[in-house]
Image (cartoon, rainbow, N blue to C red; front, side, top):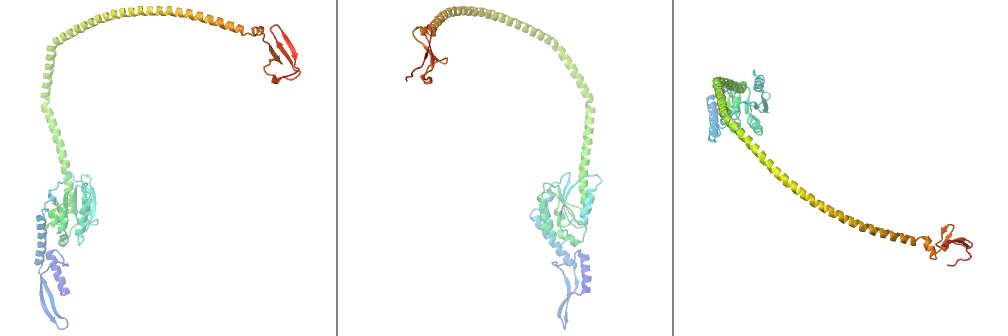
Length: 395
């Protein structure tokens, strides 16, 4: 047991010496007395506490975690990642209400160079028993989009030494050490490093210091580009100036070379032109002779062909005349025969051979079914007409 007055004194002393409060789970070394009371019996009463013992216990725990990370070969892994020359896409692990987070964002967004950054907050507890779980979960969520981000920052405001002790954690350090992109810590303390600080790519003392580092990184790149631009401009200017006279001299030499070359080859060119003209002229004459010979041959062949064709035409005309005469004679005989047949078939000639035509009501009578007793008929003969009346009808 410990009396309230003693507790207030000893707890304040312990916290001032260790930077940590008396909490469940820590080991302490205390000075006690054994007291006996007639009513309450035997008691073990705490009189004093030795903070040096507890500090040693916490340090042993830290050293064990550091040794384990080194033995597993992961302690330096995040330091070996490569930081982008322009870290503009930033994943932030912090509490959205933390003063350090708000300071970081204010400092980053209102920088003097008007650099623009893309940030994403992954909310997590920065102290207490949920620190391990929430920070590790935040790293897992960032890992799903690690190709988007240039770096991860873990930031919080200031705090007591005991508050910062939550980052002396194996699983937080283990996940930071193996993260594929750089992790920068700005947990808010200047003197002591947590294990998370040790395994991170870089440790900075405050969130605003992290913001300054990122801005300076971009400024360094901008300055470097400006320096390269100035260097290239100056180098090009000097190169042009230094080689201008050489270029002019080269142009003059080239001009003289071209003039000499043209002069030396002008005679060759004239001779080639003359030779070319003679070759073309002779070729034209030769082709003209060939064309004349071909023309004469063609004319002879055409005359012969026309002569043959005239003979063929005359023969065809003679055959056509003979055939026409035969056809006309045949046609004349056919017409005469047709005329004789027509004469023989004329009504007069038919009547002369003893035939007659009977008419009833002015029309030729071909059937007796239209006649009745008493009807008048006309009978036409070769030399006249006979009228008669029907007395009887026989079928």
